[in-house]
Image (cartoon, rainbow, N blue to C red; front, side, top):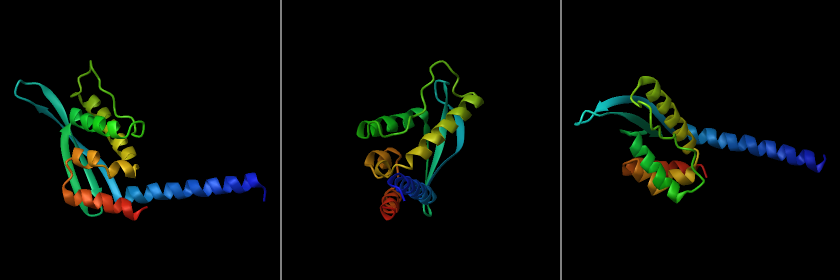
Length: 151
């Protein structure tokens, strides 16, 4: 067998193993964004809240916050992990972000961002991720243990 063929086979095996690791991780740690709601604050301004649900094993953590909250968490994590995080959904300056099509588009973009994020074990173990998403200690511990067991 030539060296090129052996290398190609080795690369293909590595790609399959990498995919299995990601698949295994995403079976243990999951994220969903099942709901949104438009809220009106005191001055009568509307905004949208997004509910993220993180699941690790049997534990579940729900957090319902505005886009600006999730963006602030992203910015803190990005300072700690520059050039490592997936792209965060962009701000939109001149759009009604409470209109149903815009809410759904942003929901889908946030979900894709978090689905990409859960594939980064170093980030998931970081206090900036765990504390930023207001994870209780039991869920934080479960995240770290699940990721350690996959190493």
